[in-house]
Every structure is written in structure tokens, then in C-alpha cells.
Image 1: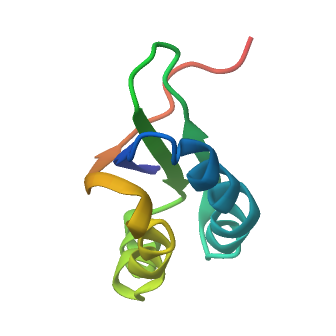
Image 2: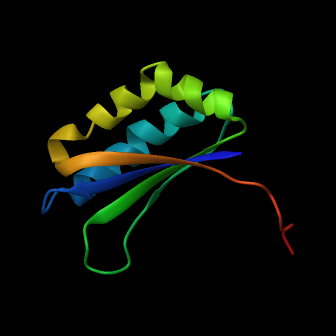
Length: 101
């Protein structure tokens, strides 16, 4: 499995608008991509404005295809006007070690 984390920081007062766009437009588009397992926006529990968009993929090839297709860039640009700074993408691999209890 491959996990892609995009670190986002929104302008003051713009997080609610960004969350709305994420829920209404971005999630459905990502979930339509081949190999996508999960798409969610992680919200900070403290008063920071640091969010993380998390997507997980069956294979590295599928995650790479999503990125190189241009869909990722299009979705990032949907909320570009709301960013306090440029988003940062980090990609990780994960092996399933523990089974659900």
C-alpha cells in the first residue's frame, strides 16, 4: 500500500471553505481513481492551521498514475487561493502488520 500525505496550511478564516471544497469536490474525484483505498482530510485538534490530506493506494503504480495524470495538480489547484503557503507532498509505503482486533 502507498500513502500520500499533502500538508496544507490555509489562510486565516479560509479553513471552512477549504474543507467544504474538499468534502464536496475533491473526495469524490479521488475515490474514482483506480486503486484508491481512502481519501480523508485530517484536521488539527489544536489551534494550528496545519491540515493533512491523506490518500492511500493499492500499489505504487496506481498512486504514481494518479499523480502523473494531472488529477492531483487539478485538485490541489481547487483550493490554491486559500493556501497560506504552498502544499507539501510526502509519499510513504506501508505494510499491513497488525490485523484488526
